[in-house]
Amino acid sequence: MKIAVIGAGYAGMAAAVELAAAGRQVEVFEASRVLGGRARAAKIEGFSVDNGQHILIGAYAETLRLMRAVGADPDQLLRRTPLRFEFPGEFLMSAPRLPAPLHTAFALLLARGLGWREKWRAIRLMQDLKAKGYRIEPDTTVSAWLDANETPSRQRQLLWEPLCVAALNTPAERASAQVLANVLRDSLGGRRAASDLLLPQVDLTALFPEPAAQFVAERGGAVHSGRRVGSIRREGEAWRIDDAGPFAQVVLAVAPYHLGGLMPELAARVAHFDWEPIVTSYFSYPEWVRLRQPMLGVDAGLAQWLFDRGALCGQCGLIAAVISARGRHLDLPVQELERRIHREIARLVPDLPEPLNVQTITEKRATFACVPNLQRPSARTEMPGLWLAGDYVAGDYPATLEGAVRSGVAAARQILAASPGN
Image 1 (cartoon, rainbow, N blue to C red):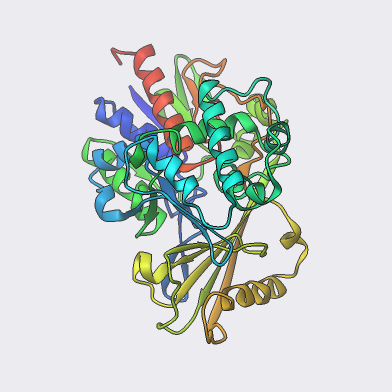
Image 2 (image 1 turned 45 degrees about the vertical axis):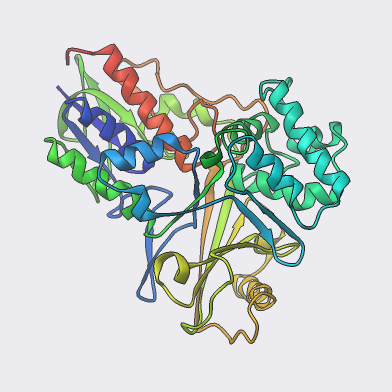
């Protein structure tokens, strides 16, 4: 019998690819006409952009594996550069091409903007974390963890706090230190290539969901875009999705706040979750405008990171400004926010003209708030043949593309293990 996946984001398509690769017939149902879920393509002024600018890192092993499996070559679609954390005029940390763990030690030792004492303190912090197996017990906030390690304020401001927000989309005073430690374990604490930045050179729909859909179709499955699911019901030993089915198994790979609308019995699993936004403003300038690096941080600004879409995607003159998590920017009218970010870009680009066009995309519930000791649901539900997949499902990672992909793969593998003959 067939297997249904509801939701064609990164989690849903990862599950569908894993199942199709194992010879299972899969049907995917997606309400939007654009694949990718909360990491999808959007159109502005003739440009194909993303509803939120995302980056990957070399540690995203499952995402890279599945991209290769569906014919989406990471070497062609992602710009790989050694870790570079830069706030112009304030801080620069760049990982040299040395074997692990020397690449991390030298990145910190050679960092500009920190004194020698602060550099050694940062190295000792990483060494202590490694000695403890990257376990922080009991889990606490990132701010409390930094307090306990007497981390200097400038090191916090320029290194750990921006890293926390970038990785967990949750401010340090609320974010889980344990989940940050998991990310540090696999990136700065991993092999040298694991800390590389992987910057998409195509939109997020083309990066994986579209090639994944083709992969599924070539193996006898189907991906139905623009198909909103109205009902899921159990009939005998199988499931019906609206008028489609029967399906032996169903993977719910929708945003967690949509669970209750499809299956009211599951709403309680995420009732305690809180949400964090991501704001992305796209500034269209004359084609000659560019940043000196494809990705730059903004120190003490409203914007946190700037991306040169010309350098990444050939969209010359287009600058993406990203603000992760909640903050004072949410209290500003959009036009005022855009004006202030333009002034921040002007600090980095001499003789910057006024933008030709600006468009701001706000995902109010972009990710779950990754707080300490958050109880995240497992992939298996109490209902036979019904599974969950999504970046919020129990796992080591925060709400990232890799977290979503891992959850989809995990759900698919549990299905295969539970029903090897179907």
